[in-house]
Length: 165
Image (cartoon, rainbow, N blue to C red; front, side, top):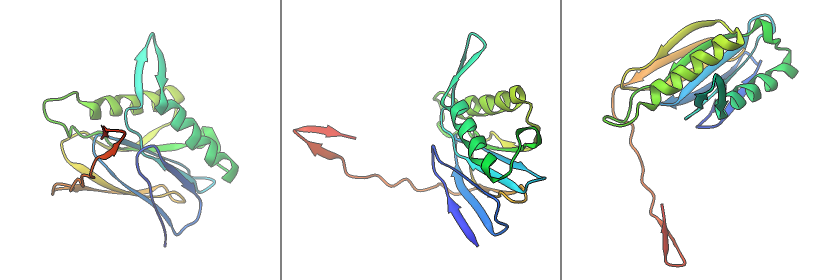
């Protein structure tokens, strides 16, 4: 099996039957796209894709989506045949801005505006998700992470007497 793990800001595309793309999502959002005719797909991992202003989407998310789609095209994907599955957008930071719902709102709005049908969605809640996606078939597998995902803190780097973190 050809397993690829992606993190925030990354994406992966492919058409090999043995390729699987995986990630862990909290408040981030992943949009899995595939072209069922060409057997080509891809997945991204987005954090804070942006906001709407004056009915225009001013986002890094829109750019991320265009990059994902443009990486799929040379492999045979055609935009009118694209299908989507949407995952993530949990509310992970209690008492703070709900970034997860903002991410979900962006993703739904993007798909609707681009005319890409969303065949499955698992968003919201308060738990992280482990996601696996098979680009050649469009199959996705998601599992809620019941336990806390450990966060490893690194030691701050000191430079010129200024502590960076």
